[in-house]
Length: 312
Image (cartoon, rainbow, N blue to C red):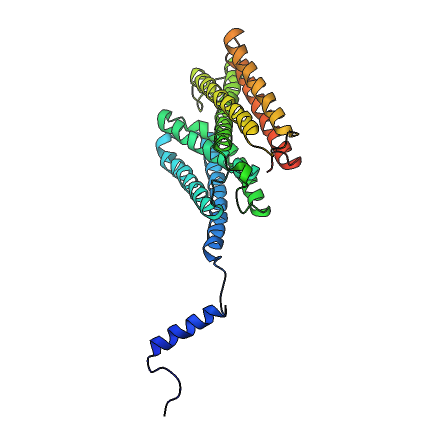
């Protein structure tokens, strides 16, 4: 006697699955891959923050304890490499989650600045073996990444890139501006070290900083090159931003961020002018670079996170 069931169980399961799909029974939205990418990106952001914090603490302890290079060199470098690897993984995971490079929001841009600072320090350490520099630059990367991670995890990120941001001029504008911030951070660290070491030399007490820092001429060279490179990329960033503004309809004209960026550009232009025309080298230029970078950070946080400017 026939029961109505197919004799082939595989065919029965296939037909039942097709029927359920037609009736939308048991259908689930395909959100798992994206949800996993978002969770993974958040995990990598936290791990990068912890890695930068551990590296900053290790470099400070190494700087204060004045340990021999060969005793802790490998461990210090390994911490930075691990944090940088986690940060790079965040960039990849965020790109897979959002569908675009994470540069659309202030928190994403801040995180990329921290990533660039860490990468720049790895290059400096690889070329010059000046690990004392890490005690001044890695805390900057940690603070920026910690702030970026806090905003990334507490504020919703845009699901898709808005049409006004889908422009090569926008990518060039943001990329060069962020690269200039990284260079100015390196100049800040070199300037701060120059100030401390020069103060000790003037007092003729060659003790603490003299035995832990690179020579003054090395710090002067790093500061000079970083400011020149940062100024070049900031100029390109402002120029590409103007082209983006003129070629993209719908961009707001009443935005305080371009005005503040122009002020930063004028300050670093004055630094370069005073260095080459007025002979402001060494201590004066170092103080100028430290003050300029602190002003840059202040206006970035105020305009981006307090006033909510330059958000599209």
